[in-house]
Amino acid sequence: MTVEKANTPVTMPASVPTTDVKVMIENRNVPACTLFDTDAQKTFTSTDPSIIGAKMDNAVQANGTSHDASRNEYIGHTNIAYQMETLGHESGVGGSGNRAEGLRNGAGVRKCEGRGAEEGKDAEGNQDRIVLVGSGDMTRAMVTCLVAAGHRPVVATRNPARARTWVGSDEADVVKVEDGVVMGDVVVVAIPAKHHHTLPAHLLEKRVVVDISNRAPEDPPEPSLAQKLQALLPHSHVVKAFNTVSAYVLQRGQLHRGREVPICGDTSWAKQRVADLVRDMGLVPVDRGGLKAAREIEDIPLAFFSEWKLAAILAGVIFLFFWILSLFRGQICPNLDGNDGTWDWSLFEVLPLNNTQFSLAFTACTLLLICYIPGMIAAYLQLWRGTKYSHFPTWLDTWLKARKQLGLLALLLGATHGCMAIFTKISWGMGDEWWQQTYVACGVLLLAVLVILGITSLPSVSTTLTWREFSVVQRYLGWSSVVLVTVHLTIATHQGLLNPPACVVIPSGAQILVPLCFLTLLVKIALLVPCVDSHLTKIRAGYERTKASIHSLP
Image (cartoon, rainbow, N blue to C red):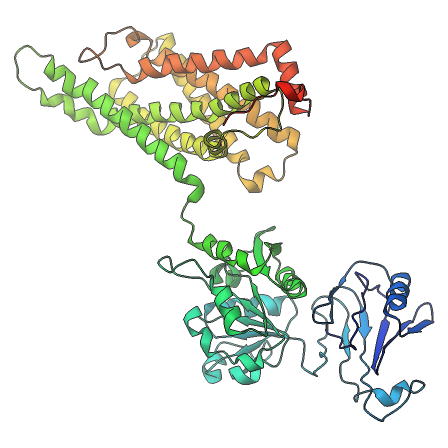
């Protein structure tokens, strides 16, 4: 809502109560403001801005109206019932005692009674509606959401006849671009960025223009598309929003609870107006600051598994290492060590299944261990530094942030190994020896624990758990998985742990991982010693040693 006023800005309170409040401003040589509280039946009139502000603070509670002093405009939230009127005193008409003669035929009256309520008009007599420029997939999706939220949007397009084929007459109005952009205070530009220059800049002045465009991966990130649009529309208030939500998701109504929509802009009241629109559509607005943040927001849809890159690269390198290792130990070295000099190609027949499933097993085991090793390194660093407030080295911080992805990949590869191992055991035959029964049982339990860890790490599940529940599951079941994988691997390979290396220098995967598993458990046990554990708990609760004794790593 916009209320025009005289020269001197008047600080409005941060909200308007549910009672109707009339704000009347007369444009004479000095600004005058009259407040009327219909519940208390009290009227306050003054020409002093400081008195007006004080009276407003006394008359209303602070929770919803923001004021942009640079433009002398008042923007009110639509979830609070109120009525505001502007009085424009015409030259030579009326006096201080006759306010009715100063009305511009009632222009500038708007009444808002809750989100999605009956639409009013702004100070220029234009309806307060959402205008969508364009008739593509995003426009169709937003029309669906806006209609569901109680709005009647305006579709402004070059070809209204074509747009009317999919827009119901009872849902939205379809008009030409020049006619549509003046019908609302918020204009959503849903056309490709390369056509932004065709927008009627003179008709978009002083309006909130929402840029939802996304750049192509090959386009330069600087300046952002939103900044370019702001340069084309210097007298409009450009806000970046909705570019991270796909038309498919909006149109299908697949709006998961808590789905965030980042927004940014240089005008606070314009961002608030867009934030209200985002909430109307069942989404959660996240203010990312000024329009310069648009570049980061535009990068979000272009991200390609950015959080998974480190984990995926590590998993690929480790798998390749163990697969090559098994190739040398199972096929190449036995042929090189043969006395007759001929190659036994039958050894390569088990390459697709046997070598791959063992490589998957060793890779999953390694990934599981390196999920918990960085946490121990962080604990020892905190003990050494005597504080939790010192930053970890960058490499360790990156490693800690990748633990979730490493764990999920360990689950994936471990489950794949289990499926392949079933067919391997069927072909080999399963014996009744205790060690075979034990390592298979440990493998099944390990898979079950990893599944639980993976499920509880999903946002839709973790948000339903208390912090205590989540930490207990991740901590105790996590280390239980390390114990199970150690037992499973040790028993399964115990008969070959002491065998000499192949080709003199090449150890088996088990000869590498079994010592690493026991070493990991040994380092963890040291942290569980009561005196060490209690001191670490104190540090993580905020205790610090004397500042002079705190060390930090580069």
